[in-house]
Amino acid sequence: MSPAVARAAVIGGGPAGLMAAERLSAHGVQVDVFDAMPSVGRKFLMAGRGGLNLTHSEPAAPFLARYGERAPNVAPWLRALDADGLREWTHGLGIQTFVGSSGRVFPQEMKAAPLLRAWLARLRASGVRLHMRHRWLGWPAGSQPGAGALRFHTPEGERLHAADAVVLALGGGSWAKLGSDGAWVDGLQAHGVAVAPLRPANCGFDVVWSDHFRERYAGQPVKSVAMACETAAGRTPARQGEFVVSETGIEGSLVYALSAPLRDRIDSQGHAIALLDLAPDWSQEKVMAAVTHPRGSRSMSSHLQSRLGLTGVKAGLLRECATAEDFRDPEHLGLRIKALPLRLIRARPMDEAISTAGGVSFDSLDSGLMLRGVAGVFCAGEMLDWEAPTGGYLLTACMASGVIAAAGVLEFLRSTGRVPVDA
Image (cartoon, rainbow, N blue to C red; front, side, top):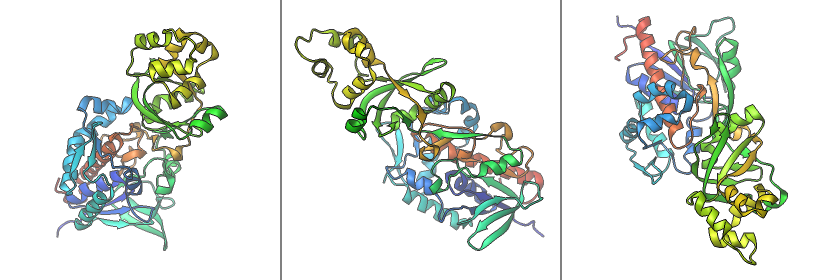
């Protein structure tokens, strides 16, 4: 008599959970995916509205460096599924990709929906079962956490589901309306799992604008600028790009790229200083020569427009952040144009953030992403304690962590002799 087929429950229908489900199903495991929302992949679809950024084409070393202090933890994931591997996987779904001018990788149609449809069709064809509107409630009262019975709230009331292994892919704490609400934190902590506090990542920041500046410039993009951050260890390398002035502060791709050091500086000091280079293509010497050039009867604003092309919102930022003394001294003003201090007072609320930092501590996990002391329960995706900037790095690592968690489940099932697994 052949052993029964192993059963795995994947809780969370985002990219990490679906990737784990795919890998497990390919090795003969019966997979049930549970999600609290009416459909899977909602945050994935929302992120792809402006063009789904799958991954990035930069070389492996700088790619890995994007994960900051968590790079050593993420490195094994990327060995299992790197940017090239993710592109090949996408092509296997019949979705072609291309590299944009920024090095970012997109589906040919720039849309998330066709990829998700093809993926779900392949998952269903392999026998993966999807259970929507199933919110995980933890384990039955009095039982120890682990593989076995799981509690779910469903439209028909509470239900139990038995599994030989569990993959938790519950997301972080941003975009709660799409399912990532961080509600899992208290439950895991109650069972002794170490969880670093969730914090906003890839987020905007609040600035105390003057009424004049806010009324005139809110909503306007600030293009062709560079930004750095003052930290306890010194100034971060400047990044060039663009951001948007909002009613409350600043947001946009350049801000997101520096959101981690800016947020950490606010947490430690109560505020952060973002240093803006309003003329990143000009050397300090060239700017100084332009500003100190005799201006005759022209106003300083006209002079800066004529010599530097500094107009609109950039000129407004200079007026907003430089002092009256700076404007009286051309040399001071030349320095400010290349390093204009913008004081940030707080990160925007976590639910407005693109992603979150914090989550299940790596000290609570083994190399296969199984919770230590909780046999048969694995974690994947954004619910782990790592972060990355936008640009394809988040999605790549989420999906790669799903591969690692699936491999951990297969090893666990082999070690317990629960099923014959072709792995």
